[in-house]
Length: 108
Image: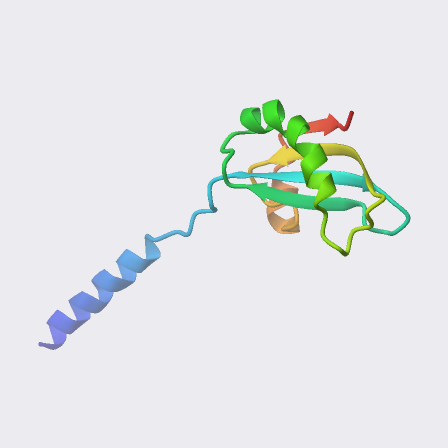
């Protein structure tokens, strides 16, 4: 009986070790801001876009809506000076440092 419990424990440990938590599908967009405060970036996550190419093609049209609905902590007179699409969260410095953003655009 001890051997059976040991095998079950080992099998369970191996099964859990194989379960790597994957990041959610979607694209992060880091918006560069210009305002009177020291807040110079704002990051949004869009789960409906799964590739950098989709982000590049469609985010310019979404930017005015994002800027119109900024959180209260960001001044309403902020202007976007550019944006970058990334598959990794740019707020997590350890992950973001290993891979540069895949695209960068100036706001226009």
